[in-house]
Image (cartoon, rainbow, N blue to C red; front, side, top):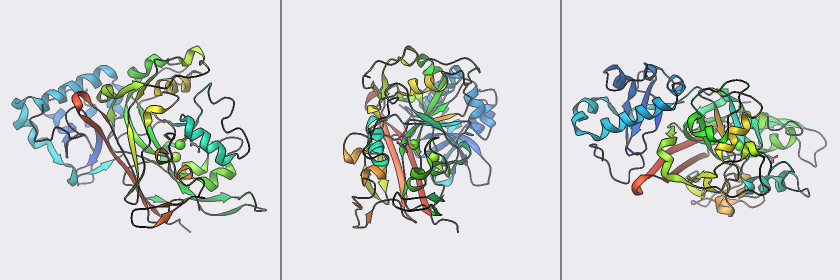
Length: 401
Ligand SMILES: O=C(O)/C=C/C(=O)CC(=O)CC(=O)O
Ligand SMILES: [Ca+2]
Ligand SMILES: [Mg+2]
């Protein structure tokens, strides 16, 4: 029990303690841990000697702390738990807590390499039908390896950043020639992102068993996608400008250790995978909500994903590629089987053919200028608690002409 005045069902109780970076209001950047509606100033905490992490908590991003590896992540988390539960520390900790409302969240880590997977069987099947009508929706490799592509790390932005509508080339199937202009089919993708902490060595693949040693924590991801640009450009090399203009992530990195109670069996795979992809089938019961301009339109369940994050890590290093602190890999769009569980609007509105009606009566197919899309999520915590992920929110600004 924490000595802070927190409700037992607060999703940011001492069982969670996600890490982030914030501007306290003077234009500087500091590292913090979220507890309830406050931020614990980790830089100050380390300066006064209440926690020790080789001065990595003085940095403006989490990367140096991530690089310390699992033993330090555990030691610092244990220490924060002690400081926030033992009333003997109350008087020294209280001055280091800032109200969340008075700080501005920053991108918590400098994104190294960014990979996006494609691991939901339902999403892959739906997109196959929509993008390749008449063809087999799942390509022959889909059940043998976690399909992914390398995205653009430099355009990963923190929740709250406005998104400018992208322009680009598109050519509807019935048009004679391509045109250039603002995307008319701007979409979202609700995903779960895994933040790599420890570095691996070039030429040394990781195994599925290495997941817990190398992955530090989890963020929510909105992989904004311009479907008209994507449909025209993606063959044969895959997503490019249709997805590289912006990817939003939540401001608080939930440590993997906070998700121990959220582990659930992942779906069994058929056919059996190659030995390097064999894993313990551990999924996470992360329940996402997609909110479109105030209306909850979908509740994608992460637990049903076919490929697990441990398999994704093993696969992305299977050729000897190394990972670095701050690398981010996203699960791929989280879509459950029901229409109100899909993680993209192209699925929700079936390519724009079936508009959705928001609570105030407006109808939507794709995202319009001025719309705000918010993803939130929770997962079960220890002893009946709930782990919150905060939100990833973005508002669309008109295209730049
Ligand atoms: O099937 C396709 O051609 C395209 C699929 C996607 O756009 C999905 C994607 O970016 C990966 C994912 O988020 O699942
Ligand atoms: Ca995606
Ligand atoms: Mg993207």
